[in-house]
Length: 157
Ligand code: DQA
Image (cartoon, rainbow, N blue to C red; front, side):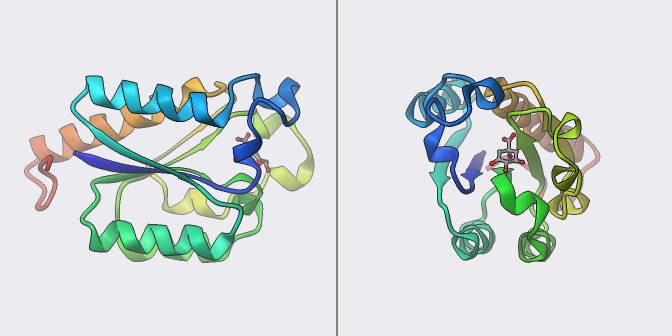
């Protein structure tokens, strides 16, 4: 099984930006943690971060052509603004989990909208960087139950 773990704007600043919301783990440490967790479960994780909306769209489309099995995405502030990301996830039809480090539902009004959520199989919020590992588990669980049901194209690669 191969997955993309995509992070949007300002997530490269983890450990530096607003630690009260996002904790003290750096982006590099987060990537190491995700890679190790995935390796232990026989999953290959490709972790990427960009500050640019179109690049996230490109990577979601690329996931389709590379036959990626699942996507974990923290779109950062594009969560609350981007119909393009919603359309991209809908276009590729790849199981996708939305994750937010902070508890967005307890924050400002403008963070209460998530466009991408409608295309995701699950949303995880407020569990800190551990939420990324829960998102990986959700993809594994989804893959397992889809293959039990014999869904076409659901087997692990
Ligand atoms: C975030 C929440 C967003 O509202 C914010 O813009 C981010 C990070 C989170 O992980 O909690 O950049 O997605």
